[in-house]
Structure formats: structure tokens, C-alpha cells
Image (cartoon, rainbow, N blue to C red; front, side, top):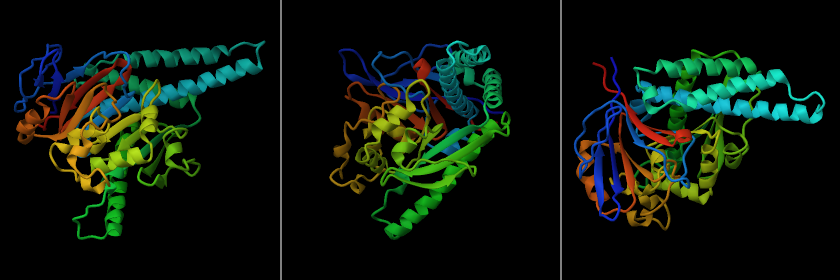
Length: 401
């Protein structure tokens, strides 16, 4: 029997006071409890860690941030439910846009006939599904009530597949962080890159397989999958997979814009190398534009991919795991202080691979920081962002009893 458990650590600046570290433990529908420091892990069910922010903040449409795919997402029913919901929501929004464009075109060329009544009724059904999805709260993805999401998922995919000739789920996989060369390795740079690419393809296959599994129960013959790997270092696209008639982008800019991926997965590795390549290739705004808005792509960020999705990338300096010397002219940790990420959840930053061993370190790092909220993610935890409601919550699957 699996249960959902979660623990959030974050820091915040109190008005007109010194910054304090907070440890939130909140069971469903209970007020949060704050203390003056991060403490050892205790468990509860689901925890919501944000609500409506100022109107000028940025939110990803839907995102999942985590330390480990195999430990955080794969065994986590709530995370998988949210991932499926996010994918289907993206497909539904894209379907509505396509139908609206077609309806507008038909009216334009046949003004005397007016809009097609059947098409209007069809769009009304899509609007109803969309509104139902917006109403899902963070508790909806808990095991006790997740059948509501399951029912919505079946109806939504059935609607899309029945009303479309072809439905394509597109995965854009970005393994750049794991491509960073290790100057201390005994292997040549060529050998390191070769191994990293092979490992990346295996990991991409794992992601694609889970996506396929999540949709398999409601799938039909006109549902297909496409995937391609983008290296932000040199803007190269490799290892395209899909049906014979698949159309793939010609470069990274197109992959993030007109190709319109359903899911953008940013792999873990060296955070500094990843951020360097994002800046060098001017990808930041492209990724932000792709993952925000009414029908933004689902952003999945693992470890380094989670850090760059936050407000402040300098949490990557805390443990000393990542080597900054791989980036020319930014070879010390101090060079990365204050570096901004995608800011996909207002002012929240992320610290992956959290454990009790890092509690003292986290307390020391956050002390005195200004306006910085940090969500610490353990290996089994996933932070889910639901931008349409401006909500962020963390879910974690407990070990089997």
C-alpha cells in the first residue's frame, strides 16, 4: 500500500525583519506551522506551498521539478497523475486552438452560412473539459480522490482522439547538463561525450515509455509519439524517433517554437554548464515562452533542470557538487551568486537532493538572504506547478508497507 507524503523546506523574508528559514509541515486543510530553522524530516500527506502571487509574476503552465526520475516520479502515483493531467491539458488546448482556427476560416470564406453549429457545440464540450481541469486542486491528485482526475483524463483523450485524425505527443529532450566534460576524468573528451549521449538516449527512452504508459489505457490508433534530443551547447538536434511521416524541427529555435513540443524535459547534470549554454545560445526567453501561457509545454526539470527553473540558480553552489570551472570566465561559485533562472513559480528557488545531512548547510545558506524562497526536494519528492491556478505543491510516494 502506498501513501503520499511530503515535506517542504523554504525560506522567506519577513516584512521589515531579518530573513528566517522555515520548515513547513502542513497536512491537508490544516494551517502551516513555521519554525525558525529547517529540521529533520517528518511526513504528512500533500502540501501546497504557494497561492496567488502578485500579478506581474511568471508561472509555468504546468511543470514537474524533481531530484530523481526513477525515485521521484516513476514510483509516485500523485506525480504521475499530475503529469498525465498536464500532458492532456496541453493536447486539449492545442486541439481547441486548431478547431477555432478552422471555424474562423470557414466563417471567413462562407459568411452567409455563418459558423458551423456542430463545430460550435464541439468547442463547447472542449471548454467544459478545460474548466473541469482548472478546478482540480492539489488535493485532487491524492490517492483518495484521484479517480476524479482519472475520469477526466479518459474523457479528454477520448474527445481529442475521436475528433482528430491524428494526435501527436511530442517530447523535446534536453540532456545538455549531463554533457559537461569532467576535466578530472581519465577518459578523453570524445569518449565522455559518446558515453553521455548513449546514457541520455536510455534516459529519454525511460521518459517516453512512462508517457506512453500513462496514456495507453485511453489511447487509440491515431495517437502517436515523437521525440528528439536538443543539445543547447551547439544547437544540434539528434536521435529523432517517431512514425514514418513525422516532421521534425531543423534547429533548437524551431524545436522550442513552431514545433510546439508537448513536453520539454531538461535533464540533470552540471547546472553551471546548463545555464551557460542557455545564456550562450539565448535560449532562456524561448524556453520561457514555450512553457508559459494558455497552452504552454509541460516542463519537466530533473536536478539541474529543476534549479534553472527557479528564481535563483545559485542554490547549485551550496553543496559543491557541480564544478563551475567548466564555464570560462565564471570558474568560481561566487561568479554564480544572483544568477536568475526561468522563474517558473514566482520567487521560488529549488535545492534538489535534499537530505537530513544538508539541514545545517541549508540553515546557514539561507540565513540573511533577502526575498528568497527555497524549496528543498528529497530524492522521492516532486514539486508540481499548476500555473493556471498559480499553485505549487510537493508530492512524495512513501515506501510500500
